[in-house]
Amino acid sequence: MARRSDHSRFELKEMAIKAACRIITEGGLKSLSIRRIATAMGYTSGTLYQLFENLDELILEVIISTVEDMYSELAALKTDNDPEANLLLLAQGYRDYSIVNKNRWNAVFVYSQPDARPMPERYQSAVQKLVGLAARALEPIFRNHDRSDELAFQEARVLWASLYGIVSLDSAQKLSNFEPIDDIIASLVTNYVAGLRARQV
Amino acid sequence: MARRSDHSRFELKEMAIKAACRIITEGGLKSLSIRRIATAMGYTSGTLYQLFENLDELILEVIISTVEDMYSELAALKTDNDPEANLLLLAQGYRDYSIVNKNRWNAVFVYSQPDARPMPERYQSAVQKLVGLAARALEPIFRNHDRSDELAFQEARVLWASLYGIVSLDSAQKLSNFEPIDDIIASLVTNYVAGLRARQV
DNA sequence: ACCTGAACACCGTTCAAGT
DNA sequence: ACCTGAACACCGTTCAAGT
Image 1 (cartoon, each protein chain N blue to C red):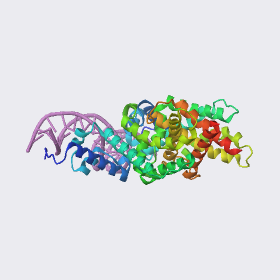
Image 2: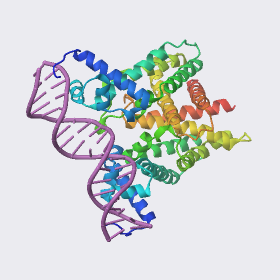
Image 3: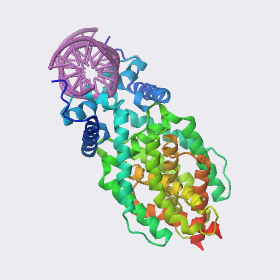
Image 4: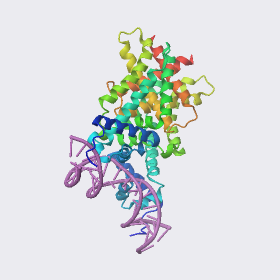
């Protein structure tokens, strides 16, 4: 072997990320390993270290592409003029995606940078785009403000983080599940929006 | 060696859980291993399999005791008569605990049962007690209802899950942190309570 | 009965050696 | 330059063997 050059560096990276994605989809993040990815690609583990710093960097790529993938699903949803209805639509889309792509989305929940470093810029901007969808839905509420977009984005971030908590607890079955998750999500959105409205007067 | 009986089965379990707790506190969940716990106890790894089914069961004990520990901290907080002020107090306590006991609380976030099984009863009831604190704070809002305690508990669960999302995203630095976490928490509590109030009329 | 330690089947990561 | 595969230092888990 050695010196095959069947694929460009770029192609190899793509192959690795795709293989990792498939392994996570099938067996969850815990089942992922460098050796397994290498085998799935038809290479050996050493090769992966020429493409990525380490396993964490590779996982990060899967995470980011998953967030981006969710964005394109949510962005395609038909929108409503009413902020509450719009947000409910987005939240249901979020929940649907996290159920259909359970293992992949769970990886997004569980992954964290080694040594408590912050998540990289590329991840942040992928999330930013998702939060932006909620922000646009909220904007009508802040019509009378001069900085309506900024305010909407702040509140959208709160809703995003809250939804993240609800869905992640539900997915790990960490919330005694007497109530269906849809009711919990509806409760969050309805009350939060009602609160924003009440405080705008 | 072999056959020492220096400690009862119960003592050994306690020792193992305490050792695991210390290792997690110092190096995070990732640094925990059966072998490391065994060494810290002065035993070998085989012994731990007479005390616990596997590593997951041992981690679960640490998780539960951490949730219980947080409960006793939050339960000791002095309470206010106003629901909003009371909830803010609890939420700040939650945040404080998660920062002071960062690695331990992070383990609570990250841990999930193998094979997607639900979390066991003991964990659920430990969480239940925590949610109960928020439920009691909310009750004045539902005074006029016949099932005020049930309603309060449902809404408390929504707030609990949302707070969980905010703190976990912040702890992993997954939320572009332009806003301080205290503002995000305040925004959640204020708007949610305002919404509940507005919808009670 | 209690505990050990070797054994098995895995890991992530590095790097000299081959083409 | 590209890729391999052995090597290192770890894993979780099992279980025959010792006292």
